Length: 107
Image (cartoon, rainbow, N blue to C red; front, side, top):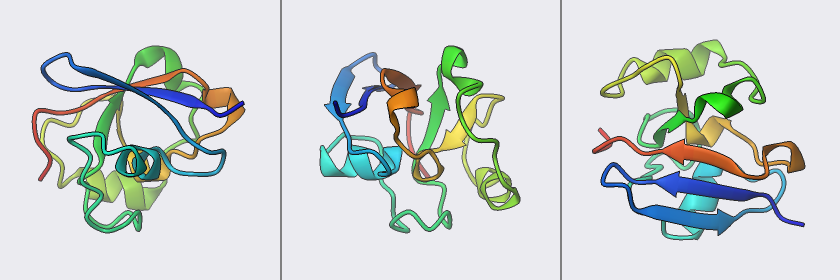
């Protein structure tokens, strides 16, 4: 079974997709043409154009942010406690059903 992720755009539009184990949430979004996830750096944690808000129910299931991700989030707009970079979240069975919300825009 492939992990499922629901992306919710700022306007409430939902995109439910499947991604392969080991892919990043950003890669799964780009592969499925989810609008609002740019991933300009290709997943190198060097741009913050895959900023997402992870639903609180899922935060404890994610690996903690490393220093690079924290640093890159400083360049994102509207960062809050549940902000993450989608390129740093790897899909797995444990994340099947993950819900992330997209900011109004990526910079």
